[in-house]
Image 1 (spheres, helix red, strand yellow):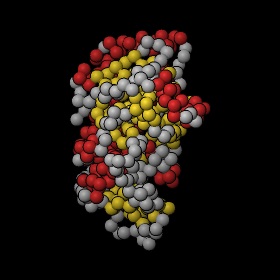
Image 2 (tube, helix red, strand yellow):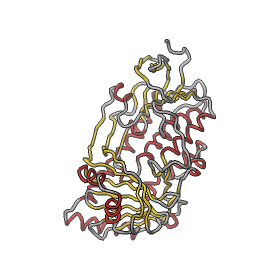
Image 3 (tube, one colour):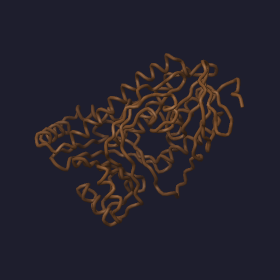
Image 4 (cartoon, helix red, strand yellow):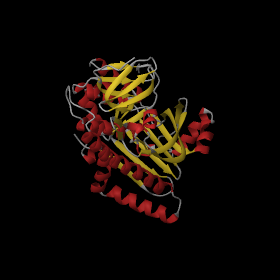
Length: 393
């Protein structure tokens, strides 16, 4: 089957939150869009168990508002948090952030990936975008004016811009021959949903204990989503614990701040690897989200960086019917802007992980002194907090 003589302006491969946001933004600016996703269409039900949870910063929420989906996402068990407490188990270092003190409406929002994805797909259905769930591709043809994407069902989609939003092991990135620098952390992130004796107080809690980092993220129903990153062998041991032993280990790992852990959901874990693609575009192909970069989850910035990619791509791409979203100038500017930002964040996370993970007495003393100084200086707290919150407005 031949490709249509009238190619799509934009074909997005990968229908997760980042890919669906690109597709929605492109469709809303007048482009002909197709979204290809190998999994079934995401569907959210209020009665379903809590699944993967992410934290959104102010910049990500502003993008969702621009796309017209923010309120709908928050109605689906989204939850704002107003305080953050970060401390070190091996020194007196402790840092607290408060939205009122910083003059912002919230420090962030917890949302479920499935809720966000389902809401974006529902918004796409109100556009003229072509949605193709349960669809896989098998080959690419690179042409001067488009890329032809050959699907397994023998259809061919012509794309003036092909967006790879297909995850950390992106097949499109591999097919394009774009190298990736990998930084294995030799660690896993253990995730679960728990209820605690004491209320979470609309606060995100994070405790560093050398090579282990534990975060409790507040949910709308009063429970917490936990992310516990630790060396691979420790994570395997934790996954084998019964619920009572796991709850006791969690309580101790958080230093008892929220009291006893009263219930735990089934646990899951994934390998933690930092990645940075050498280039974010090649010809008419552009990488976004995990296809371009992944970082350690200690600051909860992974999805925010992906949505920042979306924001920048939409800002730089020419809008309107007939315009070419794969303008070389636009894609070059996108690559320069986002690689610098993401590389900075990747290196910052590696430095922070080393700083809090070191047991050297001199480093521990400097850590305690530096964190205490930041905690006592409002200007420094504002600098670090607003850096994490992203551009305001």
